[in-house]
Image 1 (tube, rainbow, N blue to C red):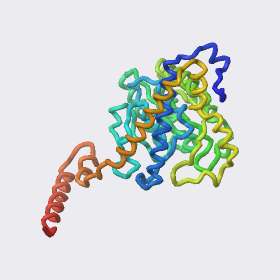
Image 2: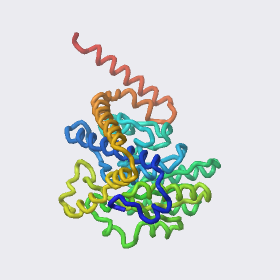
Image 3: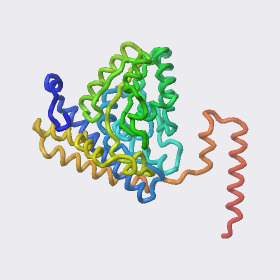
Image 4: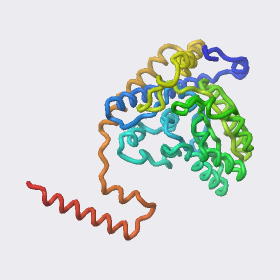
Length: 346
């Protein structure tokens, strides 16, 4: 519940305190990382930042319900999910500092790089899942997107393709109620999970600010996708407590009272109350705070120490395989650089 008390269903199921502590740590670290990245953006060290404040439970609860070999396709604010998958600050900040188109190798953590084109990752995930189906692999695929992206043609095409081909993909929609300045109520007359059911997908609705509920529902949905090799859809109702990005002023289009009502449902506060009521001592929270401080310091160091890219490196990343024309252009560029350096006065 918003005040941290268990629902009747939660009391009947019981709470795995080990899991609850892990999820709390994940959320607390993600929020601290997000705050530090926001500060770096405000100081001009990042070109842009899209905050995940308030959406930590939806991301952490879902990503921890997957297997490590399940492949994930995020959008652009899944920082909590990325950290839980093992990505570090340098990898997550490189793109936003304008140093690379992507900050990591997707194969390393089974976590694709951020997709900034709205909704395109849903098609990428569906295509990948169709490949998984043909390979006969046991893995499933999950993709994250928001309520705004659900209005895009790409997402609706992905839902239909996944349903008609039987692709093992789990669509995870974080309904944070705002597509930049457009409220969800103006985007759709029908609940998002009901729209997904219309495409033929098994659909779920969950309180996206209840990390334990998110984990339970995602675990169930992921198991069903894995067993049936058919897609499913989860709508996690959450709230974007910050702006859409550092270039957005949410005070221009939403009321302070609305933000405050959702602040009372803060996912981290809710779990902290539950853990303390279950007897988790102060030393645990002190240790998490210490880790968060260390992560914040490491985030700042990583950002400021990221090296500028060498233009010559681009020749190795334009195509999957090198070819003659590319090699000639690379050689011409190297000759140009060498000549330019030789003409610099000593």
